[in-house]
Image: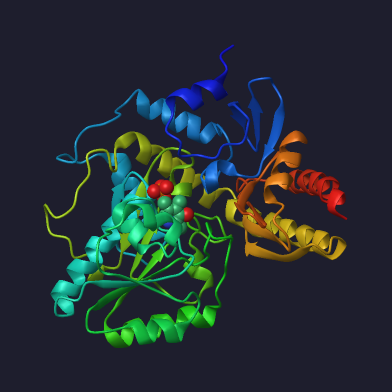
Length: 394
Ligand SMILES: *Cc1c(COP(=O)(O)O)cnc(C)c1O
């Protein structure tokens, strides 16, 4: 057997802080490592595997489409792309779709669309207001939009035109707005900085402000979209409609796909202004279509609301038992546990040993993004492992 850790050390770029586990197989909410050890997976491929691992619906769609048509060019019509586009539009407040391959790419398309809109409708305005603690991806414009210096500093100069203001402060957005502003970009819930949830009032105020000033409201639903928070889109729970939504992670159930959705007035690309070689190819779209249809037709949103609430209630229970837990945050199957000390790394190691995979989202907080098919028995198992682990700090 190869020593995979040594191969990684020798051949791979030093980009990831990995857990010392080589995962070779997955099924449902479980994965197995190279030694056959089983784990309950509450990382879910970083909020990607909405139907768990190797779900028969996804496997069937992959098999069938791979025998039919994998890739042609966007010079031609292909059916899975249009079926998925129809499904997204008919189940959202948005009117048009473009497919790319990742979250960052979807956001790049959103920036281009916002700038084009500013050029057409706001006298050449091009600035996009974003907030601190946000995460929008790793490309140059996406890190410029991301309100966290650690992602930006090694790579300056970054593209111009991103104004980063205080998180969850409507006043901050208001006072940063100038004649150069064309859009505001927000996440319904900030996933990467620890599952932060602003109030609905905030989103309503921002929506009204955008309407009054003819600014586009862009929602990055790359992590929250396609059922993660218990509704197909998180915006449904905010009491507002965005002009543009970006999607990726959960959309393909595990295959790489990204999408930008826009209302008609914001769909301002002309032929030739945007494109993608792989974006919207039949293989990933067939899988995305099968995934989304399964979510809509098999009570997966209901399961996410019900079992997600059960998970959060159980974590609240741990909070009342262990006084170093200071907060439990989240919605549906996107949640975090906040500690009063920096123990995430130790918690993750202890959970690994006991067969539970979690994400150390911050030195003092852990995050859970289990599959949307997770059952109450899975939650009970995770909670009992966590309890055992937390006991060492009691
Ligand atoms: C993961 C994520 C991205 C980036 O997606 P990639 O597919 O990694 O490019 C952007 N925004 C949010 C909110 C994310 O969670």
